[in-house]
Image (cartoon, rainbow over all chains, first blue to last red; front, side):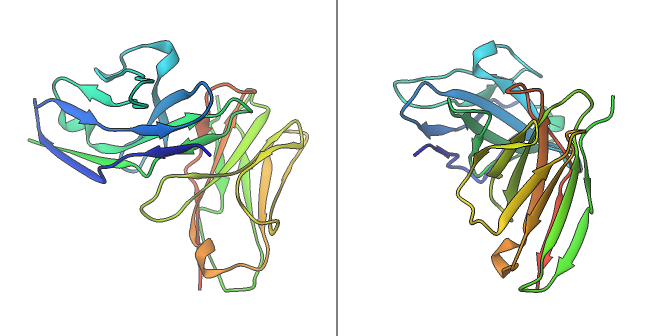
Length: 109
Length: 111
């Protein structure tokens, strides 16, 4: 069975500090991983996906198959980064996503 | 371009009742997925519809059922409501297996 774990419910940092939101997964096949973000009073939206290897809003995430991790990183946090972040895994059999429990990021001024 | 819209935004039911939630997919999308998000948890996959056929189902009992219409809008029906069904129900549309676009959700409270 596939599973996504986000060990931190809440992560609080100061503006300008580095951020790392942890995500670990278990999946027997070749995973496709995503990060979704939900800003206050907005809908859930895609932040980035591992296959595109892009940087969005200064965030990057590298898939580490050896450690089964897909941590989200940003070198310098901004107050507008405060939001709920969800890591998600897509299986090979369709467009079903398995989400982690989410991490609330709070960036303090 | 119209995004994913869901109705109603909030509703309250009592145990044993039935509920229907509605979703209009984003223009051009032919696939709709439904997720249940309990308080403090991540969304959990219920099922997906592609061209009016169920195209995958998560670990939910048969009292959770759905429909997709020719215009690709969708309904989620839940029979014999239980207290644990209280949650935010999210609809997401996509073009096949492309990026999911989520609605704002319908918050169901079961008393």
